[in-house]
Amino acid sequence: AFRRAEGEERRRAGKMAALSGRLWRRPSEALRRTAAGAVRAQELAERLRAKRSEEEKKKKEEREVAAEPARRRARQLAALQRVHHNVLAKALRQRAVYQDEELVVLNKPYGLPVHGGPGVKNCIADVLPILAKMLMNMKAEPLHLCHRLDKETTGLMVLARSREAADRIRLLFKTRQVEKIYWAISVGSPDPAEGIVEIPMVEREVQSHQPHYKMTLAPNYRMSPEDGKVLKIRKNRNAENAVTQYRVLASSSACSLLELHPITGVKHQLRVHLAYGLGCPILGDHKYSHWSKLAPQKLPEITLKRLKLQQSKSRHLPLHLHAYRLSLPLGTNGSKQIDLVCEPPSFFHRTLRKLELDIAKE
Image (cartoon, rainbow, N blue to C red; front, top):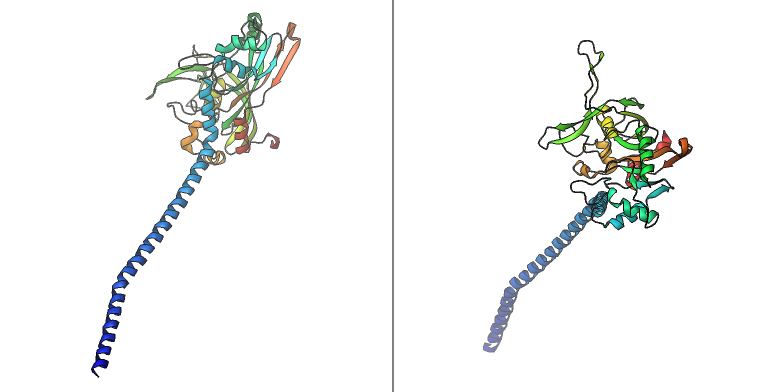
């Protein structure tokens, strides 16, 4: 009986020891489970962060793709100011659209100045001697400028091979025997859709936080406040006569494609007549979209949407003005008539597509 009681006591003691061991092991198992849960939560958080980072990267790439044309143009413009004169002359030689014994006609690229000035390292005038040698031979006389285009304007530009030819061609421009047709995309649509703007122009200083000079209108008439009649007034002695014919080719997305025929050749004539005369500034013309300040052009919502552009990025828009057609008489008594057409640059065509400005519909 004693042995049996002793055995039972041992068994109870063993059970108590085993139970005590299990009780002591349970906290460590709970800790292991808690640690495993924390690891899984950390892995999940890392996956979520990686997914969010991937989405943000994708959105950033989409924004960069949308801004890429503007950045590409900025890089190209910067490159134009850095390249050697020989490289620039070679690039211009490849853009020659017509040449004969008297003249050379180039398709002027965007952003390249015709003349030098403050901050200008490269311009067309500087490379004319090199360009002449590339087009003819090493003994060729330097080419001569016959007229000018704004830095931001693209298209047909005439150069003469000799001083005598340059004088003759300049006289043709001066006596309005050269027909020039421009294409422009305007913000808004002129009313009426076809007409003539005949308002003199003068250069004036703009008083603002950034004083600067602009061309502006100097009309020689005013409206009578009593009966609304048009009264002729004395012309500003510094003003120049300026006449522009225009015609709407297509309209869409709060913009229009215009055909412009400048009868006269006043500085910034087309830009000023459209902005201040018709109230339809050229797309990308940040200088003449406001009078009293220098600021990026303000665009309608529908235009921004079609261009996939934010208003804060509108400053990257280039000026959409292109010298499209040129017709001039040459030879004895104008016996030889030259009629040239030059397609707008790729950025101009992209904008036409985005704004759905289809000439064929008109």
